[in-house]
Image (cartoon, rainbow, N blue to C red; front, side, top):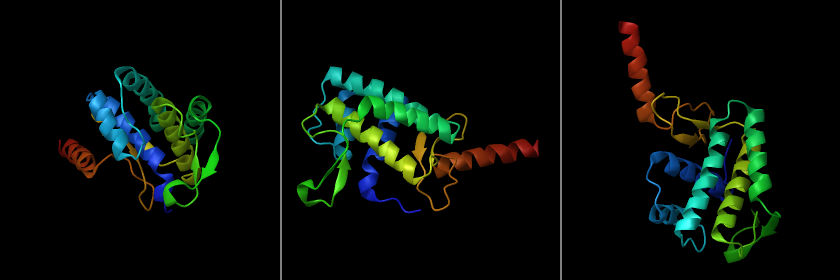
Length: 174
């Protein structure tokens, strides 16, 4: 399965926001840098906007924590109902046609909600409701998006996979 960059902005932003919240390093400045890095226009963040986007990131967390395809789809549908407006096709900035889930005139929180809900929905459609998860290492809560060839990723990083493999190996040695 090949994932197109145009369809990945929303899901990668959702991932970044979920992990930013769980890392304990949520600050308006950090949020603004994250939004800028994910191509969100006019990402100026105020304190109240930061807290509303943080609350939204906490609503997105269950999408990654879901234990089944049906549960994941149900969680994404709840996000779409709350965050996505009318879907429309656009060709701004000399880009090829792509979908927007909120008008560019919407406030920052509304645009973030729309792009993340829409991005998660598109990714779930392409990935058949799979390929979103949380690291299998018990002490790690980092969410991930699996774009690997075989779609069998269980850890957020090779470091966590290696740590867990060493732990399992040592427990067998005892």
